[in-house]
Image (cartoon, rainbow, N blue to C red; front, side, top):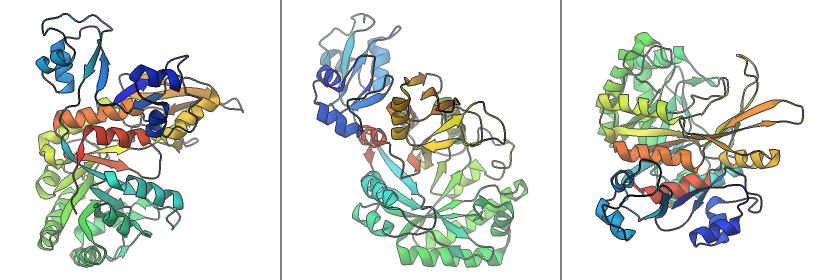
Length: 429
């Protein structure tokens, strides 16, 4: 699979000819809504076997072979060159397909407004073949340990048809926000815990859930060890029923990191207790904050590398956003919230505004600016083939268990094409 960045003057026809493929193949892989209107800076995935690489300053056969996980000898043989041949900058090398690591893939699906929209159901059906786990978000825990389910519609049958495991996501959300007081009750009140675990097990058995996923956030810092003890208790009960157990963790870079979202999440304890964790490695750029990449590669790496000091790689699922944001400038704390948009919507917006898409090499993320009809300046950050490939490369480098997407319903076709090209997806059911 090739990632191509559109340059000025290029057309779908000229790009297809460059790689020896067809316009239809590129249009289908990228789900192009306006194939005649490519945007400068837009990325395209080119569905070919293997890929091409243009030699950069400082490259050698060795560094290139390390980057792509193949031997120097194979790289030289494939390109009919000597292993000792100097590589001129700009020389194009063909990189054959290598072995694919096997990973697990989760995606949350969040019905809004009390119903499952047709768009959300269609997105779930379309992407379920790529999933190990499908996670309806969310079962809300009450203060007495009952569970309030989300709309489920056909999620169970969609999971079954695609050999995906249902994940039962339970949260301390109350009136739309994570509640510290509800969290405290859950992790300290034995009677509530017993009722809750009975209800979780009954629901899992009735609905066919095979993993129970605790997403308890905004817990009081003084309840960190209470949360750990609750997880130990829950693990004993759930394991006895043959159920997996996982947790969602705030993106920490040290055990002593301060802040109301972080202190009660004990990476070492979770790594010891649960079957796997989802690191929420996104929302550096968020709707209420200043404009920046949602999941810049540097901070994402920092979180994963810290997590690896507390737990094995085979327990870590990388969290990944399927969305970006459109901020109105200038940013003012407490001011207008940024608007969420899908990668496909971001590209359409750049086309409508007749602006080029730029790329931040440090963050490994695309962005652009535009001015709306009212004269307001905007800054947009989103995901593209390059940004998601950077995350896939990190996962392969560090041998992570897999990836977890927040959330289905936002169109990013390049992600799924590249996911399948990079990995073999483990099916559990």
